[in-house]
Structures are given as structure tokens and as C-alpha cells.
Image (cartoon, rainbow, N blue to C red; front, side, top):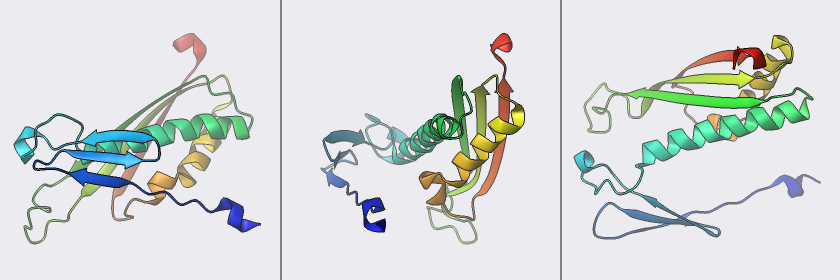
Length: 153
């Protein structure tokens, strides 16, 4: 019954006189703004910060969930996401691509499990990450994994 797997989600944004957005999705309310340098008030995270945070959180949750699904104990998870871009793209400079050009994901997982099992968890979670799947394949992706044993923590 594939229809049970279908998900629809919608966000509603209200923009006032400034660049501050009030985002409503389900029961949640979130503010998104631009930095002072970009013409906003700097009163809330800007869209790129929200996107990086969402990707990092999605990956962290995925590692914990796939560890449980694959019966691999994951004791701790830390994820850093670094994105590189050239602002000239969004300013319309010819020959400069718009958006992120490179994304570096540094993952630190605590586990007593064999490294091959932990790598299988990470590879599975990355391959099935809905947020990674929504990113342009033109973005170069670099992924680093550091396995931390409890005695090293």
C-alpha cells in the first residue's frame, strides 16, 4: 500500500516591510532574516544558515536512526557542515554558478562497533537522506568520518 508512504508538507511565509520572514509550518513558527550586510535586520538566522543547520541535523538524526535499524550501537554524534560558494553567482555575474559549490561534511561518531559496521550506517544514512537528495548534484561533496572509541572520548 504505497499510498501510506506519501507525505505532503507545506510552509507558509509572511514577509513584512523588511526581509524578516515569519514561517509557519504545522504547529511551528520560525523566524528567518537576512544579515545586516545583506539588507536584513540580523534578528534571526538567514536562509543559508537554516539550510546548513537542517542538513546537519538531518544527518545526525539519520546516523542515530540507521544505527538502531542496522543494530549498530551509536553512542555519540557530531556533524559539521561547511559550504563554499561565490556570492557573485547570486549577483548575476556571468560564469559564476549560483549557490553552494562545495560542501564538506565532517562526522564524528562514538561507537564500540567495528568500523566497517559504523561506515555501513553512515553510508546508508547518507544515501537515504532526504535533505542530501534535495541538493543539486553539481555541488561537490566531501565527507569525512572520524570514529571515536569510548576510551578516546
